[in-house]
Length: 101
Image (cartoon, rainbow, N blue to C red; front, side, top):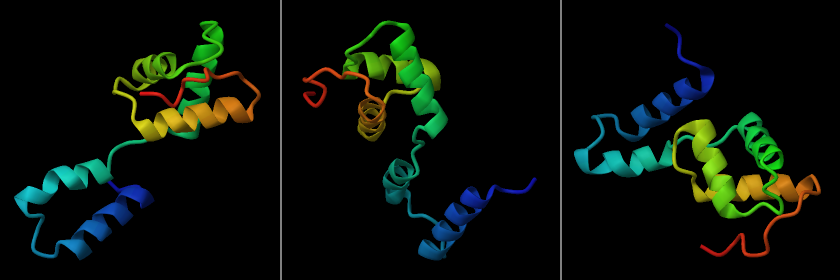
């Protein structure tokens, strides 16, 4: 089975950085760096879900719930920010308190 180009680059990067294997204490930081992020299509799906639910102006809680439902994972701050940017860029209202955590 062939690896995708992106995955091949990640494996190459790991092998270069850790030629003798990854030390045990580096696993968690590496996993954090390699964590999944929403695709452009998933951002559109989250936006569509918010619109369909009538959750406008959108807020971070509703966006987080939509992300969790689509990905089966907890939302990351960077993904919440990308959803907000997508909404704003397309003229959809967002809650003024979006940035408050």
